[in-house]
Image (cartoon, rainbow, N blue to C red):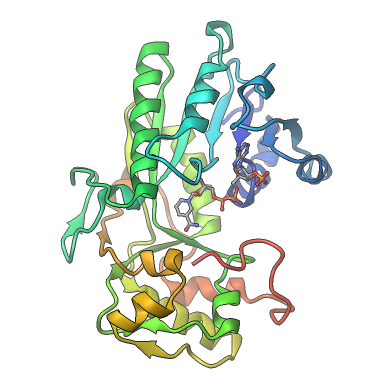
Length: 306
Ligand SMILES: NC(=O)c1ccc[n+]([C@@H]2O[C@H](COP(=O)([O-])OP(=O)(O)OC[C@H]3O[C@@H](n4cnc5c(N)ncnc54)[C@H](OP(=O)(O)O)[C@@H]3O)[C@@H](O)[C@H]2O)c1
């Protein structure tokens, strides 16, 4: 990425700020879109130009710095329905003379649905089951069509569970939330937030229009193994394990939903096409970087990220 480039991060939260930190060294100008004055101040302090608005309020989407910019679109879809109305509002706000140079869209591996023990490549047909995954797939589809119509290259990253400093499931562990038995827990994959940030930047540099790339460290595990590893890292008791019937009753619904689909993600396209050398190819290598200095105080943000 050369220093003349403009970058606009829509949904400039945890991953957005990590991307910005990597990009500062290139000298490009970085703007971040956030909803609250408090978050705008935070971005300002970090050296990111804040743009205040709300993707749920089309009237707030004016003078967005998209013209010729590399856009990282990291905002999630809304909490209900089957469509991503936020993304639609954002696309509708971009006039032809403010087209971005390209858009990197952060989607989720959830769009593949339940794949059992099958290896999931980018050729695996999407089969979103949950309404959350349906909204994601709607976002992907809508953005790809918009990009074709507006001649804006779109690159889609299908990201697995993100972990990293400040985003371990500390609250769940502190609450003693039971988990589904290790032997019943479905396969899942993860990616360290720092590696994800590097993948996003590589996608902007090397990705081409229409690319869909799975993002994962390539290590297959289960959510129960992950929670146990985090408990061990923090030196607190591992959560009690229960059978599926009890898990459905006792686990918070959102957390339980992460135990209801199985996927074993293939990350070869990410490694080869984007030339990624992972900093943290396994959980065992990544977790030590996440140990909070003061873990008994739940982190202000991300403490419940599974
Ligand atoms: N957690 C995972 O394991 C996982 C896996 C795959 C993909 N993802 C997706 O990856 C993306 C980035 O993750 P992250 O951890 O960086 O998330 P994050 O820290 O929650 O950041 C998301 C950003 O989107 C902004 N946003 C949300 N709704 C908005 C709205 N209506 N208008 C304007 N901005 C809005 C938030 O603004 P505020 O600061 O104002 O709330 C926040 O800055 C998200 O879309 C997430 O769903 C997550």
